[in-house]
Image 1 (cartoon, rainbow, N blue to C red):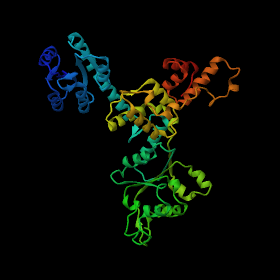
Image 2 (cartoon, rainbow, N blue to C red):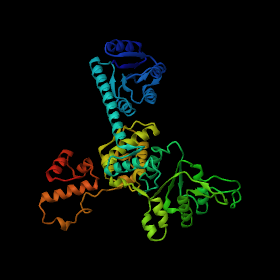
Image 3 (cartoon, rainbow, N blue to C red):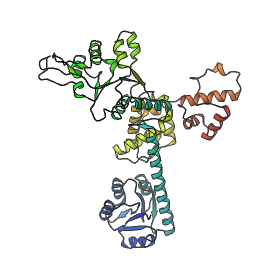
Image 4 (cartoon, one colour):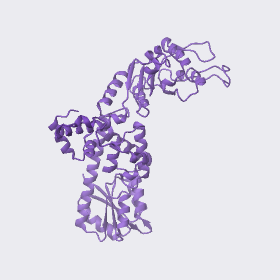
Length: 454
């Protein structure tokens, strides 16, 4: 199928001659002013645009901005008789494929157009494969190909159509709410409401009313009857986030509700039937709280029929490439950007960072870097200072001690170093190779030679 090319140049002669030169191979249309060119773009689909840098009173760079807002994937080749290094760099930064000077050399033009279209085809293929890869390793918006995350997906799949109570544990930022939503929206209650209650954010005196509702006059400020979250979520799911922060006095009432499948609004004597699913989450150690008398054991066992533990991001670094691509696409859309990827230095820093804030922090890092970035690639300087200050140890002191390796042969020490570095990088070979200063092929050969598993 022939590709469609649009020419925008204020010289009719150039439009005519380029159309004549290209029309045997491509479908070609032209415009002598940006207004007509933009109109054609809105009416038809083009693969490539030949754009003059100076179109009468208009700047081609401004037109380039408007073109990219209409179709970010359109290939734009800038043409100009006013060629300077500055304007060339500026055009490419704004998304132009390349820059040609007038008078146009037709042989160079043919080659450049074919290179640009091939680049477009490869980009489309890479984007398709990237999306396929993300789809393969995602579950309702949760992304991960690591064994720990694949196991989480399997558990969600088994839980989605049953009403078994679930507690989701893990550090802040690991995605506990996402897992709760995945269970709800992939299961039999997906057409009903998903209602979140943050137990830590609601004052102790109001939490009971928030959950169960209240009658008018039941306490100061209760000027009318109010429904609680349980009633609002009827037939759906209530997600009790930060369940470890629920007051001890209220725990007994919640236990009774779970046992009897009914509740009583504050200030009322009327019991109401309960038909909801309860999913809880916490970043606290509930078992330790039970031992210390801070959390009721009977409530713990009632809530925690199934526990899903979300690993911290530092323990699943093989998921980072997928997450990098995901957040670039996400924030490109939100920020109206066209970031393509990371520089090697930025990627190395991000692979070696430990992410105390987990996936939430990673998303914030990408949003920060993409707001600051002026190019299509996120550079080291675009990263937050805290991330850049982080120095990943290149020693093996976390895995072995110096006295443990004295007397070993160099090959044995090398095997220990490689194994420890793989563990540090969550099994990610590219990050490990960069840490050790060798090629990925060299690392692969060493892994085979030393029969390193994992």
